[in-house]
Image 1 (spheres, rainbow, N blue to C red):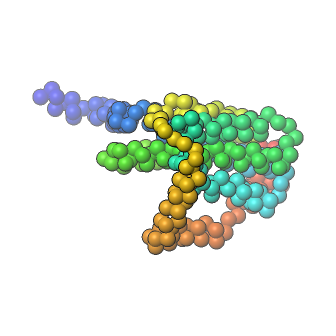
Image 2 (image 1 turned 45 degrees about the vertical axis):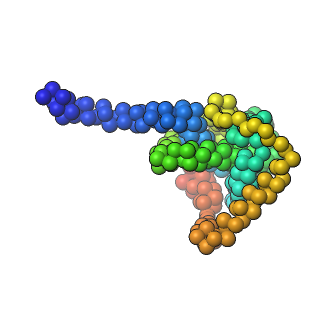
Length: 290
């Protein structure tokens, strides 16, 4: 009788609802190791979700107010910043075929974190930075996030193969972390840009980027034994051939072509609109410069 009353108590039901995600994360940590769960939350939630949400707004303000570029130029430059993401297959091949110090993932997390941190600090601390060096730093940030994304995707794939019953839970964890991080990042981006400026935001974002280094230091990964660099070229070519073979399948290349055309052909005037609604005279004046 008492147990049924406890179950019917609304307060206990609400408490169980709140604690359910915690129990779910605890279960994933026990089955997959806590370092993997932490890595997913940091890379997807903090590095991609929160940091990307913050940096998108700060990058536009930085290019407009600090570098004084025009909307058409900004459109081209932001397109160039996507090159590291276009090269994701290359990063994936490197992490699969070229272990560093006996590990396939951990060194790449550390490298990605250092690359992002140094690039963000360069944008934050350097005064009168040239446009070329600013673009190089922004591309370094993009490359660091892309490399960390590839490495954590590989970890998710490996664990999905080892624990197929938890594959859906891992995808939910990735999507949940990314969504929450992006929501928080976009919500705070405008406020922080107004408070500390775009350069200050880049300085703050060096902290989330540094957490990626922590992932590389704590991730549980089996060491690769008896590896010789002589066969790297052959493995790299074999992996490239396997990728090309997969792309030949109709069920693979058709969705890829559709996604490419849908993004490449669609008109995008976001940068022009950004300059309009941050213009002090002709627009609604949503600008940090008064």
